[in-house]
Image (tube, rainbow over the protein chains, first blue to last red):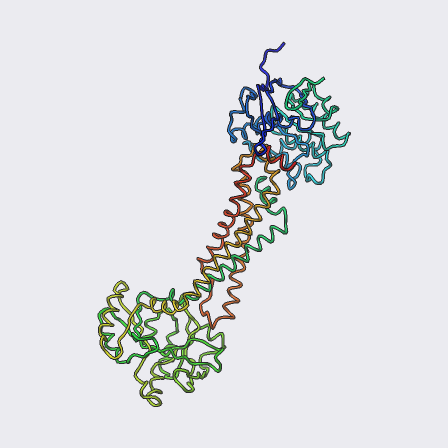
Amino acid sequence: MSMTRPLIEISHLSKSYRRGDQVIPVLSDITFDIAAGEFLALIGPSGSGKSTLLNCIAGIDAVDEGSIHIGGTDITTLSEGELAVWRSRHVGFIFQFYNLIPVLTALENVELPLLLTSLSARRRQEHALAALAAVGLPDRTDHKPAQLSGGQQQRVAIARAIVADPDIIVADEPTGDLDRRSAADILALLGRLNRELGKTIVMVTHDHRAAEAAHLVRELDKGELRVAP
Amino acid sequence: MLLLRLIVKNAFRHRLRALLTIAGVAIALTAFGLMRTVLDAWHAGVSASSANRLVTRNAVSITQPLPIAYKSRIRQVAGVNAVAAGNWFGGVYIDEKNFFANFAVEAEDFFRLYPELIVSPAEQKAFAMDRKGAIIGRKLADRFRWRVGDAVTLRGTIFPGQWPLTIRAVYKGARPDTDETVLYLHWAYIDEVMKKTSPGRAGQTGFFMIGIDDATRAAEISRNIDAQFRNSQAETLTETEKAFQMGFVSMSEAILMAITVVSYVVIVIILAVAANTMAMSARERLGEFAVLKTLGFAGPALGGMLLAESLLLSLSGAALAMVLLPAIADAFAKNLAQYFPIFFVSPRTMVLLPAFGAAVGVLAAVAPAVRVGSVRIAEAFRRIG
C-alpha cells in the first residue's frame, strides 16, 4: 500500500452565498482526499453544490472556511494573481458548453493556454497540433468552433485542457450538452487521458451513466458529502 | 502573434459596429481638426507676424488717419531701421463677392520690411516704376487668372472712383502662413489722386509699418515713437505687429471661444460613443473573459486586451481622419479663400488627431477594462448560465 500524500486534500471546507441579507449555505464541512491519478465523479442533484466544490478545487471560487491542499500548496491562501499562475500550470478545464473562443480556430483555441508559457510560437503550434491529434481531431485545425459539432467542440476543449500538461483536469458536466454517442466518446477520451497520461480527473455530472466512467464516485446532497452507493 | 490576432478579431467581431465606431471617431476627429484649422486661419495674421515689426496707428482708432509727415520723425527714433506708410484701400473688383484684401503701400520700404513676400527683382522694379502698377499674391492671381501685364480696375469704397491698375508683379510667400491673396498698389498713386479730388485727405496714411533692429526693445521703441506725438492732433498708438493683428482677432473672441468649446465637445461626445461600444463589447464577452481568466490569464492582461481593442478602433478612426482632414481642408481653402486666405492643416493639428484618438481609446476602455479585469470567474459563469 502506497503511503504517498494524496494530490488533493480538502479539509473542513465550507462555503455559502449571500443573497441580500440571506446567507445560503452551499458546502458544509467537506473533508476528503483525491489521490494522484484518480478519476473521481462528483454527482448530485441540481443545487447540491457539486459545481461550487469543483470551482473551489480548481481555484476559481473562494472558500469561507477550510483548506484545499493541492500538491502541497494550500490554494485557499493564494492571491488572485498567484491563483491565475497556479491554474495555468496545474489545472485543465473542461466546461459543459465547451467555452471555446468563437473567433479563433480550433488550433488557436488549443494554443491559448500556452501563451502563458515561455514556449516559442513554433513549439506552441507543435504542442497544440499534438493535443488535437490526441483527441482525434488532427484534421480540424483550421475550423472555427461554429464549424464543428458539439462533440468535436468538446474534443477541442479537452485538447485545450491537456495542452499545457496539467496535473489535474476538472470537468463540469462535460457530457451535459452532448448526444449519447458523443457523450460516450468524450467519456472514453477522459478515461484514456486518465489511464494513459495519468491525469487526475475530477468530473461533475448529474448523469449516473457518465459517473460510471469514473473509478470513484462521491455524492453531494445539500452541501454535504456522501459516499455514493 | 496569436494574442494580436485575438485582439484584432475581437475588435472587428461585430463588423458593422466596429466600422461605425471607426467612422464616428474619424468624423469627430475630422470635425475637431477642421475647427482647429478655422481657428488657426483666424490667427494666421498673428502667427505670420514678425517680432521685428511694429505698427503705428492713430491712438483714437484705426479708421482715423495719421499725417504722412510723421514718417520722417518715426524714422529718427533710435532702433528704427525702416518705415513704410500703408492704407487699407478697400477696393472692389467688379462685385463685392470677389472680395480680397488690398492695401496701398510705400513699395520700396514695404518690401524691405516684408522679406517673406518673394518677388523677382525684375518684377519688383517694374512695379516700382509704374505708379498705377499693382503687385498681387500667387493665390489671388490663380483665383482670377491674372497675369503680369493684365489691366485690372478696382472700384474705390474708401477712396471713391475707378482705379485702373496694371499687374506688374506676382509674389509668393516664403512660409506656408504667408498670405498670398493680397493686392498691393502704390500709396503715392492714391495720394496723387486725393490731392486732385479731395485735397483734405491728401498727405495722410492709415498706419505705419516699422522695422526695428532689436525685437527685445519693441516696448521701449513703441513708447519712444508715441512720445514723439503726445499732445499732438493725431496721437499715435504703437504696438508690435502681433499685438496689432491680435486686436483684429479679439474682435471675434466670442465666436472663437465658441468654436474652441464645440471642438472639444465633439471629442467628449465621441468618447461617450466609444465608451458605450467598449462597454457593450465587454458585457457580451464577459463569459469569454472568464474562460481566459480560468486558463490563467491575469485580470490586468485581460483589461489590457480590451484596452488594445479600444485603441485599435479609435486609432483606426484617427488614421482615417488624418487622411480625410487635409482633403476636406483643401476643399475648404479653395471655396473660402476670400474669407480664409491662409487655410491649411497645421502639423500641430495633425499630431493632435492621433493623440486625441489614443486618449479616446484609452478613456473609453477604462471602465470596461476594470470590470473585465476584476470579474470573479465563478460569478461570471453563474451570470452567463
